[in-house]
Length: 113
Image (cartoon, rainbow, N blue to C red; front, side):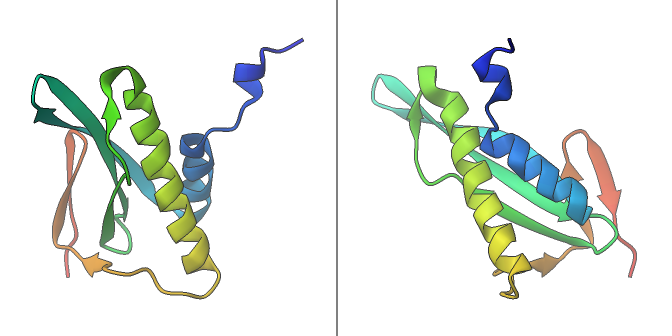
């Protein structure tokens, strides 16, 4: 019998599946903010398409304690997935800007116009 953790569909996995279908690339970034003697953690994801020359940066809704930093990735993936579902339902993505150049992880992609 498979482990239940392996069977669980995460928001990150669901977002990756939708992005694969739509030809988009999600790139995650972990953010930190020093607050007194502790550090709070959050995340953002940039969803982009090299072919279309667009990118959308989205932030997690909440900040988390270090032991729960993984929740920040799940939070931002949920935000992004809900936005993509709305977009697919006929609503437009807000704040989508055409870009000339955007940094994806360690690779640079440039869109010529």
